[in-house]
Image (cartoon, rainbow, N blue to C red; front, side, top):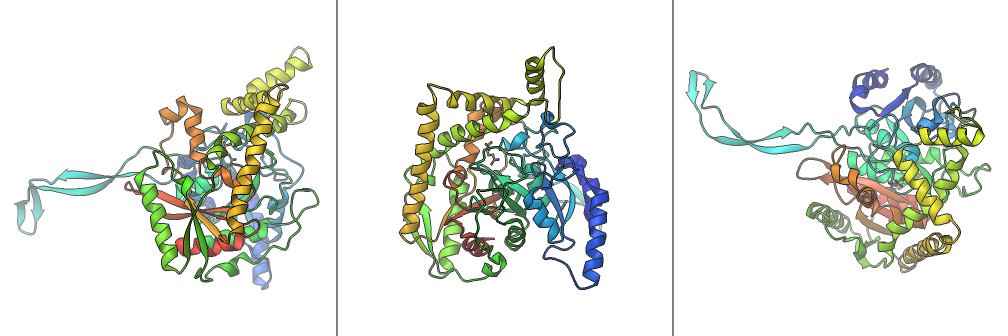
Length: 482
Ligand code: GLN
């Protein structure tokens, strides 16, 4: 009830939820209450969660925040959400996101932008009144002082899991599900002062999650701290016969890794992540993170990941290529929206023209282009080769004994909604993903953890990248930083 009333109060301003499932939440909570009263219940019994709109939830709004899925209510439950419910979690509703998870600011949603609960503050010089009322009446007290004032400009929460990050940050749920194809868990976590982990590709089942780029997509949690993220991931992860890319390995007790000393651990600092034009405060944050881990007894080593600079361009070929294929299914026949036409082809065209937003259409165009005869070898195949080189860079570093890699999570703090530069040039928006996409290209686990505030009081995050299926080391190290 407390979460539902917080949603009622704050959601009109934040737009984090696109559907609130109050009846369902109360029903689930009642069952949890009964279990807890009997001393029973799962690891998440009664914990209220928000679910990104990309996860199929049986009989409940599931639209990937796209117009083309209008009215779609699946007859199935995604494996990840089913795992959460069987551990006792309670569903509060569906969370806003970039349309089909394409974006880095949560501005491409059919349901409108999500607002970051954080605001910039300004250090202002305030002229003090020449008189103020003292004990003995009005006395003169001229002069100036500095005060912090809030800037009311609204900021993006990052994307594509912007609703998840905003809701967790604003206490509109205890934790949330999210997905990460090229940074969509870690970048919004960094922008909102929350913790987000993208596990190793294959750790969570993708079954029942609306597909964007199938070879990159992974589910993971956004939570308020590292421990909550560890508990949530433990529940979400599983091998699943319905997703052949999910991996049959026992899911460790991630929480047990928290608090273990990092003494003697080898932390790699990749020189290629020092990108041109990176704000000084991001570099300073990185240095702070290095110092914390060194103070905790870790050994800091310089490493090189030489193909890093190709990750972003290669990602923006591979991801749209897979998206253009995955999105072919929205044809007005099987799901959601149908705009009538004079014949079936006309119906397809009208439905897709009306149903997809600008960014989604741009991705379909790019994807179709790079997959077309004559361009396939030059673009798509080339990008796949680059992807292999990126993966090998990481393998070399881990084989040399590095346990974990530390980088900034994003090249800046949260920016303003409707930023003119980014609206005018999609590539500027894509640059937000510069530190996060390599991890998806290599299939590795990555966590974003809040590490400080910028000069305007906005949260900044650091990223830790680990060996395949070594999420434990990420939780262990992130806990030293948080
Ligand atoms: N910003 C990236 C993109 O738009 C990331 C998306 C994601 O991780 N879902 O493709």
